[in-house]
Length: 238
Image (cartoon, rainbow, N blue to C red):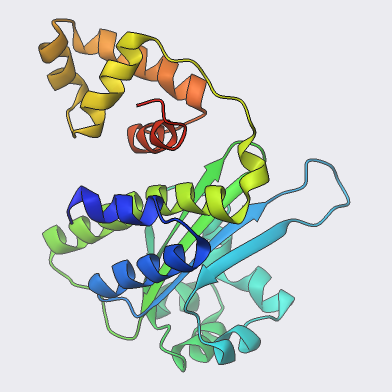
């Protein structure tokens, strides 16, 4: 997909537009269901985490899936707690985890297979994204790899919008200062240039560019180039 399509999700002006663009994006990838959840864990013991979600999950399925015991048994929920890369779920995963009955329940609502990914963020926050459908995923390796890459990138952009729109107080008011060289590197990165290509343009080594990128990540509290670009755009640093 064109990078502009991802930016349309991350730069949504309000929650309604964010949800509409996220649903449309998932539908273009042939997933009729999408759910995004921002989880904010309490810093201290004895408090409950806060969950804020958007998407188009059917109300009937929401009501059928609220059992806390079932949520704890769900192998997808278990994987999301530790993994930071997209993974596929299907009936085999549930059966192997001794939770085939949970799959039977959700399959009736069109949740037979899908892809889920979690981004574990600073300040006790997590962003979960899941897309689901009733038909099997493509079996061709190149199509499946492209799909997983699309969803990983979508999660990064959706997380930025979720943090900005669903929990604006978590953003803080500090605005980091970037050096002119860091701003220049971010602008080239936004154009899709690799560290090697940026180094060639600026007449420095790839290692020097990666050194600057690490400093940028630290200043912005970002974990990837895409997230750094999004945060810099939101803060009007580039």
